[in-house]
Image (cartoon, rainbow, N blue to C red; front, side):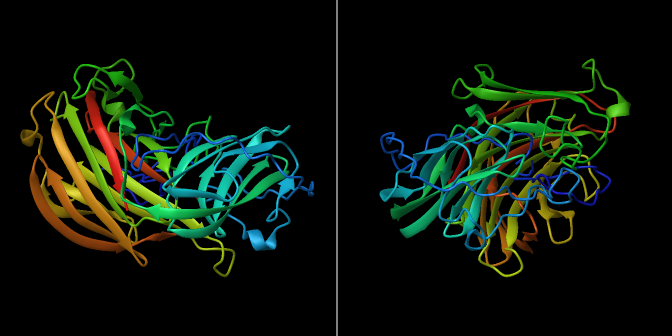
Length: 419
């Protein structure tokens, strides 16, 4: 699934799971905020940074050759930076200290270390809920009503750390929808492995054929479009013509749009169109939620809940059905719900809606709706442990068939509703 190292079946399809997949840090995890409800509050004035001590640098042991996607989150109680640290400039412009906010709350911060940035994290009540390899944060965090302690921290590649603790009160949390995801910045992409430009260079991403195909994402496409701003995803062998050398290669696109452990129910809703419905091996649609409860013993409890689905047009699980990802076994499993090329007209819009939730250590696939036909799924699998990448992301993956037939997909009105 999305960004997860997984066993490959004959479809050679990765999920992404992920979080690209993945993940979802990925190539350079910088998430952006879409249109949400409730109505955003006015942009606050940045909180002046208190006087915090400089602390000795920490030893860095994580590299891209590690099997985990990011360095493990620390328990702030066992660090020197829990009450604040100032090894380089770090500014948190939202939220302000002692602010009363509604959930999801906007977190905006930037760091300017002398050395290159290693990562930034956001902790809420000692739970690491957001990770990025960028030197800036612009995300929405879901947190339950009540008083919370928050820490925004940044670390550079030499182990120097700055951190700012902030106390906030969440007055309420209501169902929220992040919409227009296909128009947002922050999208990342990768083929079989993460590219050289990624912090995770060389780690497994979308799996499949290691011959990297040509692929691109173009936002703001007016035709075809439902609202004048669709996103076009193209995939082909180099040169744009079918080539079996690139057969069974995949390309994953994902966007870390939010974070937090304060929500457990999700609706992933979108429209998609294909120019050649009989060309793809499969089309994949995923949602991932990861966080690390650092208050747990043995250095924390990094986990990820992955909801991975694919329209398996030509695979072997069997083909022509919707598959869902079983993270506990690392395999795709068929739902028995048909998904065949004959159901989709070329360049025509199709409406897809997934309803998911999590409870305890399990992910639940509730219902699938395709072009108005609602089908109960009612399957559950155990979540993935040991996933050190904290975010809520949405993902879309394209898979080439055995012949390497090129095709285009357009996504429009992509949204994620959470509560």
